[in-house]
Image 1: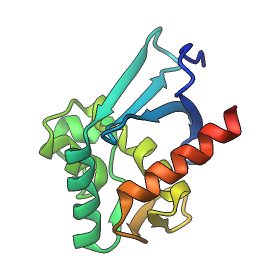
Image 2: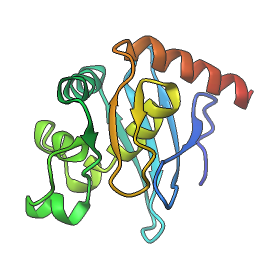
Image 3: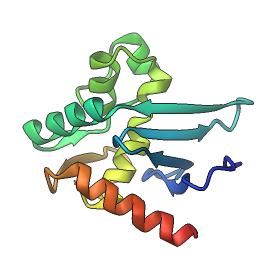
Image 4: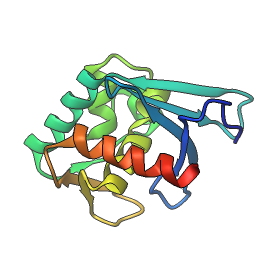
Length: 150
């Protein structure tokens, strides 16, 4: 996956049985930018989740205890996906099913940063809050990842 020439992008992988590579960065306001490349498509997508959106997602997980990933593109499009992270993003932020799948990248980052706990399942993934201080924790994790790159 090509990385933009900007030094601020860092590399991570999703948690699933087929780990997918992606690049990400946060800006000064802690808006999250995710660069995903689709294997079968000849394009990348640069998804952006605002600080406000991330806060709503973090609150959703905190309020609901254990939250499933629930981000199947077909099921989201048909309106048959179970309650969970992807469906919450799809419905709350009026995203396309493909954009709502950025929930996989967000979940991986939040688990790797220690913000959420993961049930360690590759199928039937679920997450719960480990800390409510997601902004500071994500910033610290991002700074750590930047140091690893440089």
